[in-house]
Length: 482
Image (cartoon, rainbow, N blue to C red; front, side):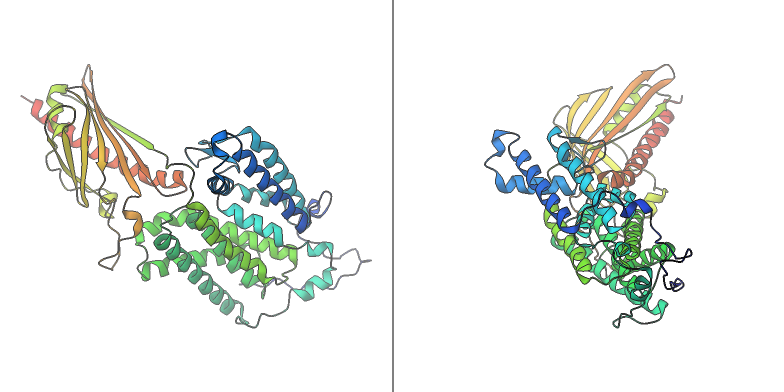
């Protein structure tokens, strides 16, 4: 890690005095101190709670439930105070009574950012669910910008105080800080998944953000660092955390790879936030900043247990054109003979691979069993319209994957009950050149951010559909040949 050059003593009458490296507007104009900001946040929270409580008469007596719902809506929606069936940007709906509270919060945050002395765009972090709580707590305890209180010479001398608990060399300090942060990350991950069964915003957004913030701040208290140093520290922390999670048999490598993009992005944001706060405060050591940030994660675990919306349902459809009549295709989808060995990437990384299916009975209420290499799915026929439409309610879903790991019995909690297929259907439409066969699957998962994990699940489901439909096409066309 490279240290910045020492800051020269300031001379108020000299024209070459080094200026603070933050925008001028950050310390001028409307400002909010710590106590004022905390008071406004508390007042906004109480107002939001009471407005939510009295929105309908039925909610007046449900005080504990309303508190939990208000906390969840405030911390885990893209827009504070919004609610909806999903946590997505487009899935949330904003109640009109929350708009004044939201506006007051924005105004207070702008004033607080100016008082701290960092650029206003950092306030956008409040839009990230889970991370919002960490940022709110930091804004409530970080002191007024040192540039507004101290001369530049005082800032320079203050930034050179060593921290005795860490190695003095930059690389030794960096490695120590990364190891400490990674151990915290592994501990938080294990508690979140094994104790709370939580695979949500607290785990995939707030925890990586905290690790980047923690490692950058701890290193910055002893050594100067630039933005690129903050990025490197954050990435080193994420990588080491992943290695420890894999080595300690907490997670398999496939799930870690899937979580890496969002974890890396949030960790980098946390690291850059720490670097910005270090510049604004002159690297003043304030242990309560880190203590409050660490305490926010357990609070998020508890709050996220009161999730007020159900997991969103995703729909995936695929189709193939088959040069065969629908009557020839219908029996091939009711009972699917053993498929050839899958050669796709998903099959090679042990994602559940479909083998065959068979149906017991005829008509509505008949049962269908789909066999995967990880187990079987039990289905019930809801629509039986030969040879046009077959609709199935999926009653049970097998384990979605087998982890890539050297440990024989590794079975993370998210493999049981978090991914659920709800409905499947086949539609056969006659066309001039044959039959258009369309397969549709509706599924849910209990992982958040829902859209992020939906992006991973959707191509897996589509690959499965196309494999079944393509094999059906080959078999139907082979049967139609004279």
